[in-house]
Length: 174
Image 1 (cartoon, one colour):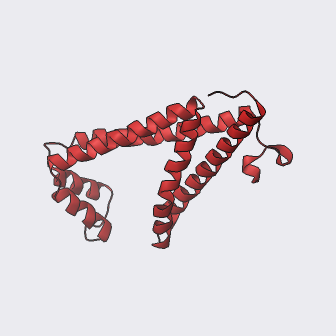
Image 2 (image 1 turned 180 degrees about the horizontal axis):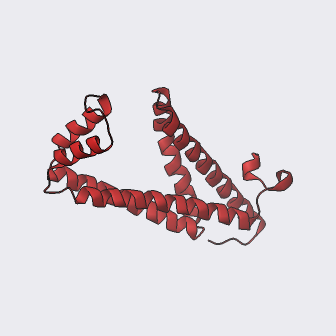
Image 3 (image 1 turned 180 degrees about the vertical axis):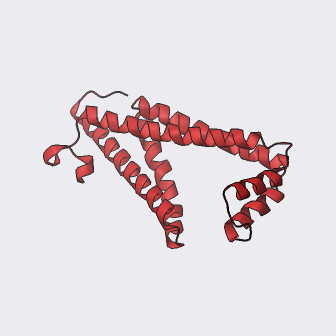
């Protein structure tokens, strides 16, 4: 077992330390939900506005070369966005942040279903992050993959300890 998942001398973390770690992951999930919620409000503010003009201002403000590939993709997408598509993006952002907030609530309250959901939702992103690494998007993809591997590994550990505690009759929140 990894030292990151163990206390001193390779012993499993105490229930209190596991709860603290799970709550830290709950805060991470809530933060992800908050960022997407804010992005959704930003998209909402673009409805009935000239999105292409806003995109051009952003590209200029960030001193990006509009002839390069990434700014070109961004400007092209902005030129073809409709209010209907913006509403769909806002709805998607709303659904995503709702899921993240429910997950964060469950983790904060030490619910087993939330631990399982966190492991599954983190694992779902791993193939995409590996693919991004293989395409050469090293720094961000590597950080995202490392964080997800750590979260998934810890959630699997927490679930295993939850089962062990239940089998031995140790008290743990539902």
